Image 1 (cartoon, rainbow, N blue to C red):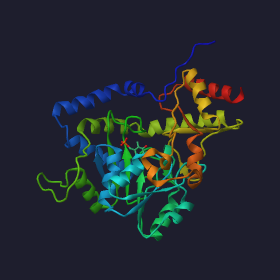
Image 2: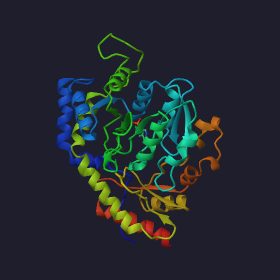
Image 3: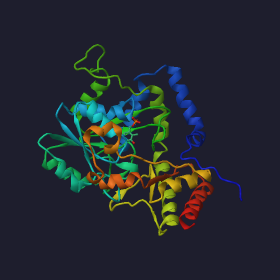
Image 4: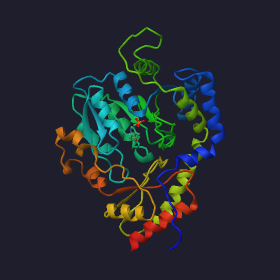
Length: 372
Ligand SMILES: *Cc1c(COP(=O)(O)O)cnc(C)c1O
């Protein structure tokens, strides 16, 4: 047997080594100026990130869960308000609805794209519905046209969860520019990742931006002037400096992800029993996650692990079926796609620094499993 190539799910150390000089200088700059909270690094990052997404305002936060919560508080969510969220996502999308005082209403996701199915939203709307949170899951934009139309017809706000979709697009328009506000995560493993927790909101609405900034900073933008009760959710200077450096490489890294996904698509298509990710028309996928589907998913995961290939299941239990939502009494037939996907999805390693040798090892192992 030939030498085994280890393939991690992601390799943040390799990424750091590629930009070590810039990173070390940026971090030293923050330490040298003691600009740990707010200050020039945070201001610069907010301006740069708004420009990158093409949004007029950016409000940074401590992480991408807080940013969802802060946006909903700023949008005025109150007890009794219902917010529609996809059944297949990370729990931050739904738990923040409850945190903000609202009621979670799950909606099933689309068979092919794992994003909220716009055709099913209408039936979830009641007189108490106030908003919709589409998640651009795995890096593919949700179907924003019909989602925005439905929202407009019922006068609902849309809060985009862009945690996995920096620079993804729908019909040529960057995600994060459709809704009243959009939330981003810079968790280290995200396409743009800090060296710790970090998050941000973008919006075109200046009044909403100010309200979100106040909420993130104890309810006031001027020291000791607390106009409302807020929370402490600040992006720190070190993370802002790290993000400003990495942001300069994001387009190149995104292109690398798309190239690697193209190789997987080519090599793994047409294999009996294996479904590669489907990109719907007009969507620009940024491949935070490359999610396959296979009926014998758990066996495939084990087979790859035995060959030194790390994979992840995003996510093994869809949100409505988690113990955290037992109170809703969801049945499999209520969310058939999310239910089916939870036992068939498997995310392959895909990161900009991945070597051709590593990718070939993954492809070879997947093919061996499927044909064996
Ligand atoms: C990562 C993630 C979040 C939360 O971000 P944190 O920065 O980890 O708090 C929210 N929604 C989705 C879909 C995510 O993947």
